[in-house]
Length: 345
Image (tube, rainbow, N blue to C red):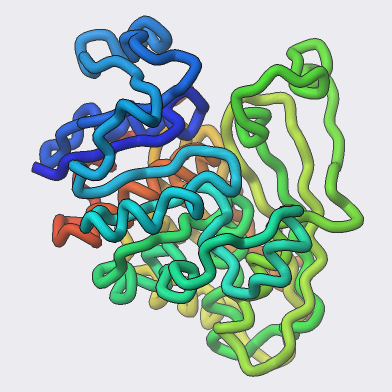
């Protein structure tokens, strides 16, 4: 059994980890930290876990994290890099759901996250945790930087096109929408029901911290310089993400050949569903699952290809992907504990 610790178990990604790991056949939940909720049974905060999770939250100083095999950080940026060295020295593997180990460019990290990186020696060995594109490195990793939710959709949506060299890498446009849970579990006026319901808005238009992360990874797919315009939007739903990706075709290619690029790239991927050409994937078709679905369009058979990508921002966009990485790191079948059927309606 894999002894698992979770630092920051009270947020949305934390409880999503608990939901998934509670029924994982190879996991023993060992420690769940929360300084404020020390001693409170997890199921008292989250009744959905009654009968599944029987341990209590413990303050970080009491939690025996060094006795775990792997520790997930479902915390604000900056927490994992402060604790990772001690855990690694004790032989514990680290999976960070924040941004501490996503960006290899330290200057970009410090610019966008407004803090110095205090753990660059660990960052150097960290592996970017997108299994579909980085599987072999994840298997050997001690430290995983779990991808952001938006970057997951953009990378998997653009990868086959950039790899084949059929689109202009310098003029990528990503129009993306997320449910309110993507902002985390916190008390802010802008996240209140009366503020987010029955409205729709863009944010981060002049610049968003997921842009440098995405560009850094997209640049690995092509020798051409990547240029990305990324605009996120907040939509009045709890969970779900829809990204509409635009690429300008630079080669004469048929629709059948475009579809074949995606089918070939993801034919063996358990959590990427390439739908028939011209399909319209919906966010509810992935709700509460680790599945990402995508479909291609080509308006008027012109020189623009559109990729529609949907996922659950809390699962494939965060906690599910982290568990996918854990499975690979410990030599388990990749889908162990993750084969949930999406919830509809």
